Amino acid sequence: MSRPSGRGQWPPDEAGAHRPADAVRLRRLDRWQAETLREDLADLYVESSRAQPGAEYRGREEFLRRLTGDIRRPGFALLVAEDTAFTGCAYGSPVGREGTWWRGFEGILPQSVEQLTASGHVFSITETLVHPYTEDRGGVARRLQERLLADHHASLGATLVSETDAVTLDTFRSWGWQDIGRVLRSPNPSSALRPVDPVPLRALILALGPRTAAGPGGLAHENRTQRPR
Image 1 (cartoon, rainbow, N blue to C red):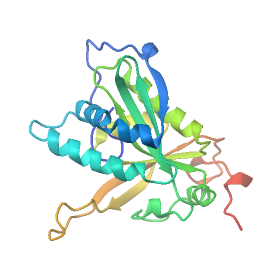
Image 2 (tube, rainbow, N blue to C red):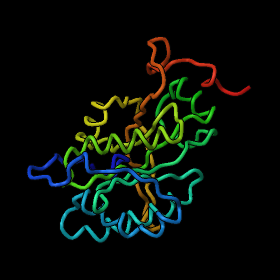
Image 3 (cartoon, one colour):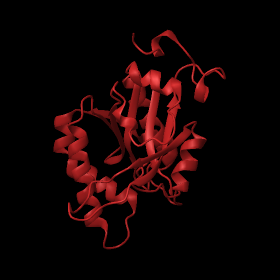
Image 4 (cartoon, rainbow, N blue to C red):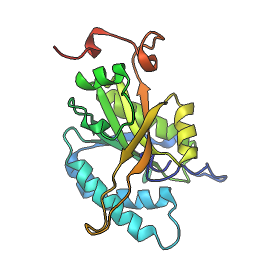
């Protein structure tokens, strides 16, 4: 899978895949290891994103720039999937209680999502990448996501997907991610003299605790999800 964060697309599995899912193991990297292996992670990004010819270098440099910023975020965590080499990775960080991660959300944020954010139980997945020749790419991607969220005891996963990336949106929905609305985000401009239009993204959430029809978005109301007084 290529970037579910609104900057790429999940291409279909290919025939002749040669990396069996049962040979893939997951491993956590700390900040120092992520910095040390950033070039390998960038290679994985290029191979999984399948950029148009001539755009690989620009995409790779942009990925490295974003990764450098993400590594500095409080609570940053990264998992890699590997056999004899990297086959995938997923990383992200906790959503701050102040709720700025949801900036640009159109309309009213579901109450349960707001409560979980305020109580510090939401973890955002910034990237999920899986090499195109990995067998059961979807299975590897889901393992990465589920492990990343479980390691941080999150009650809710959150991610952003490009509104035009129908393949990734459909894939995430089939895994249980719920589309709760549109988010407009301004990309980092390449030039301060040139205005950049906001990018339309879809906000997806994955509830990890009990579900109930009583709560907005199908999320259960529990004591631990209430906004601190």
